[in-house]
Amino acid sequence: MKTLETLEFINRYSRLPQEFYSRQAVAPLAGLRWLTGSPAAAALLDLDVEQFKRRDIADLIGGSSSWVGTNPLAMVYSGHQFGGYTPRLGDGRGLLLGEVQNTKGEVWDVHLKGAGPTPYSRMGDGRAVLRSSIREYLCSESLAALGVPTTRALGLLGSDEPVYRETEERGAMLIRIAKTHVRFGHFEYFYYSQQHELLKQLAEFCLETYFSHFTSLSLPYEAMFAEIVERTAKMIAYWQAYGFCHGVMNTDNFSILGDTFDFGPFAFLDDYDPRFVCNHSDSQGRYAFYRQPSIAYWNLQCLAQALTPIIEMEGLRKGLESFEPILVREFSELMRRRLGLPEFTESDHEMLKAWLQLLATNKMDYTLAFRWLGEVRPGRRPEKLRSEFMQLPEFDTWLEQYQHRLKGQDWDQRQQLMNAVNPHYVIRNYLLQEAIEKAELGDISEVERLFLIMQKPFDEQPEFLKYAKRPPQWGKSLEISCSS
Image (cartoon, rainbow, N blue to C red; front, side, top):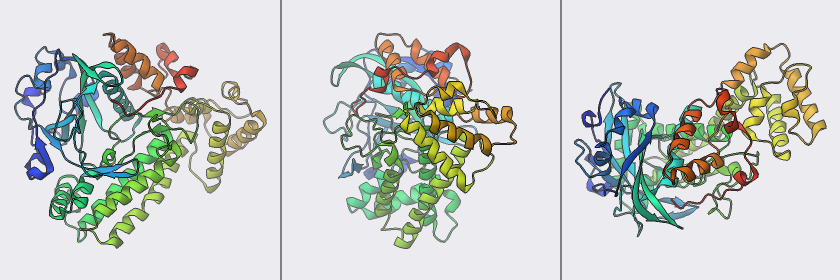
């Protein structure tokens, strides 16, 4: 295992011209200290997370001492926020410390959130608070354990420095790692500012760095755009299949590699409600759960517009046309597995639609309903599942069709397969809130406990069954905003 001091930085993005970023040192936080970290994310950098407990690590990460090999910079980009274009955004509280190559040859961005003000802070303090940092740390690593494409969280640092939002909170830092931090908004920035030569240079960088398998093609940029569409569609299919609500689907929050990016007012569905809006600031419901696929397509259209100086319209149109078929295919496959079906036939689409309608009408817990569905056996009523439904005749009719559809299956094997894709645990907002309240009092144990539980979301984990229960009523009505 390597140490932080021996990481191999290659820092490709910093070789781009100065118009792409501003070099910026990390601004230290008072009383900065390591709180907790992810062994799985650390392993991606060939690191043992235990070494982060050294007393000098917080100084190294937080800017109080020199970290050899890093080249901190704040990226510039723009983006469509809630449908309106903002011409200049950029990293207002985060810095790309550098890019690390592991022993497998994989390259990971190392990014520090809460690193202090940058030229893009827009009058902000450039800080992150413990509350939002805990949320991103736990959610990104939980999504990874579920198999959802996502950025990762290496670790969490707390401090004694006050940060002011609606109330006084404590400043924190989060180390995020990702395959890239290039967003749709990077291309929009250079397109709308009429810097088309730099737009082409950005496209060349992305092609050579992330899509090099297309460089020998006659139309490499068209192929690159088509893969961005494909990756985005697959990410959205996972969101919809597992009930994940992002909350702030702005174009500056969409990665070109189709990884879930920037965690603000996210939520997993508790009661199944397609119209659920997890962001208290989203008064129009633009990013409601059921709208996530159409918003993702809209964002891809924005990216396509920004690429018009280097890709012909026909190539962009062809790429966009692939979004819906890929999304439907990937979502259908995920739901086939979640329902325990050996294959997905045309009639199964109607059965899935009827199942989701039952969940919505009866306000069923989305996660637990699928988990309990695995307990269904031929000729028997699944009482635990059935007791949750108010419309019993409708449920019984659907159940009879479902049992008939699976006639002849090995029911025990089917349940094992379903349990491998239907989580028993998801990172619910009320669980996060309870962990945050303890952490703000200096007790990080609940954060660490939630992390351990969510690393094995499909396992029964009998000692933690209370974390799999339906949330209390107050836990369903938490208001999460963009403030962080």
